[in-house]
Amino acid sequence: MPRGGSRGCSEPAAGAVSGDAALLRQAAARHAAGALDEAEALYTRLLARSPRDANALNLLGTLHRQRGDLPRAIGLIRRAVALRPEAPVFLASLGGALAEAGQLEPAVAALRAALARRPDDAVALRNLGQALCGLGQARAALAPLRQAVALAPEAAETKLALAHACREAGALPEAIRMAEAALAHHDPDVAGQARFLLAALGRAPAPERAPAAYVRDLFDQYAPRFAADLTGRLGYRTPAALAALLRDSGLAPAPVEGALDLGCGTGLSGLALAPFARRLEGLDLSPRMLAEAARQGCYAALHEADLLDFLPRHPAAWDLIAAADVLNYLGDLGPALAALRAALRPGGLALFSVELAEGEAGGEGPYALGPGLRYRHALPALRATCAAAGLAGVAERRDVLRQEQGAPVDGVLMLLRRA
Ligand SMILES: C[S@@+](CC[C@H](N)C(=O)[O-])C[C@H]1O[C@@H](n2cnc3c(N)ncnc32)[C@H](O)[C@@H]1O
Image 1 (cartoon, rainbow, N blue to C red):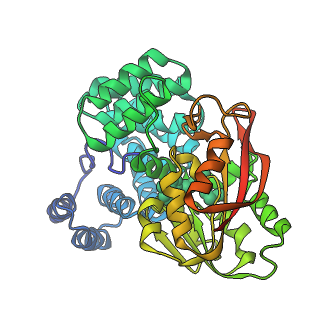
Image 2: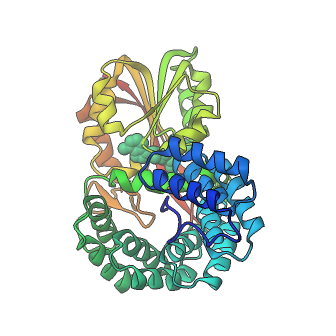
């Protein structure tokens, strides 16, 4: 989700006092230069003088959005909209902030209202398309995203967003065309994601892992809705199932000294793991997921990192390392499992879930990209990878991990010990 506002951040001011106009220009210039503290002070000074200056309210809201303080941003931008309800800039700005906060229905309403007044706002069109995709309305997302691509063909990320929407809507030839068009921009982040999408569309070999930028953006966008969506609509039960496997094994009758929740997300897994450790730490790629996790109150420390970078820097550091619904963003599990083993103290326990490829043997290779852009693994190959990494199997349980498009997702829960 783009973090900036729509094209043009201010509306022509109605009857602005000339001193106010100069102060607003000065604040906006500092803002554009990235001097957020200075810009905030100037907007605040202006608003103390003219509390009904809608442009200052909107721009100060945009500034707080850039800082990640979405409730404050939304409050300020709403005040701008209340003062100037017909102004498309403020409606688009509100829609973008609401979408980023995961409030997708009101975001769609605000973005539609903005676009009714200013139909060629490419950022608002892209935000609308992505919000509709988030609501599971990929077909409805196609028109605004196509229009956004036509209006701003230089924006590789919009092409990628359209490619994702086309894939979800079943428009596969267009999805391939758009992913290839995004790839042609030679932006390394976008290119990695475009290649990943092409692999999911059968047009390229599956890479060894999902691109970190893709995972981070996916979960940053999903963070506000994740816990409710997973535990409600998607029937997610992996954290409780992993905790049950550990409890039933009898290997953790008393809490261990230190545990690490890899890919802790919003902390659903942390809440399930907390009773098994005196000190629980969490790690995730997504800052927004970590912000939600911090509110759970079950983590003594949270780390923003890629598990493949973080684990090798912490040898023999934990007694228990868990990964609930995380390793399915990796294809080749060899490096992750070797790093996980090395980060365990001797005799330490590894506890994780993996989605299984179809059929007992899991098809042709050790892993494949599934329809949800997550990897599915073949069980025999997974067991071999664990053994090669120096992790000895203790307990294993097949289970349904969650629902996906109304169908159960089969997986396996594994408990292993550092050999
Ligand atoms: C489906 S969520 C599961 C969250 C949590 N474990 C739970 O059970 O609710 C997967 C999480 O893993 C994180 N993740 C995926 N790959 C990662 C990696 N290589 N390093 C760190 N975190 C990762 C994602 O950002 C996301 O928050």
